[in-house]
Length: 106
Image 1: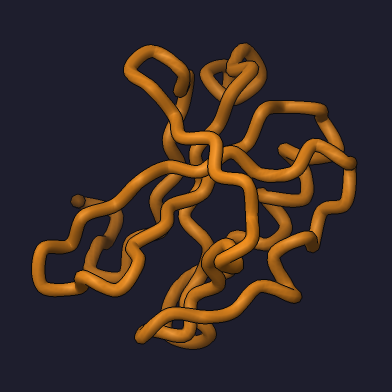
Image 2: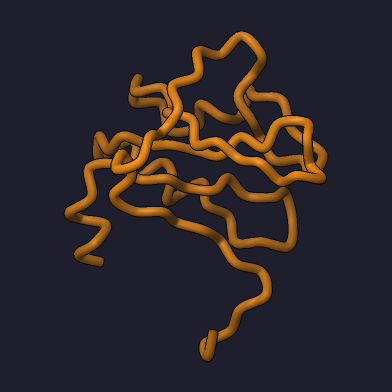
């Protein structure tokens, strides 16, 4: 898609282990394409569903998140000692969100 090709920064949700489209290949593609990638961090306050977009390492390793701890839904999130660089308004060109409850008609 043109919007992806033109984006220099991409925010992408990491996949749940089952029941959702796997975003690992898309994440790897964005890393290899040298896009600035952000992933969400929900943290421990699930009731408020607060979320921050955290910039990912830019070391070219597509599966950097495989060693991260997982949250309540078994989705990887940055470890406690990870240097958090938060997305600010205007930092994200594109957000990719896997959807479980959608079909061809939305």
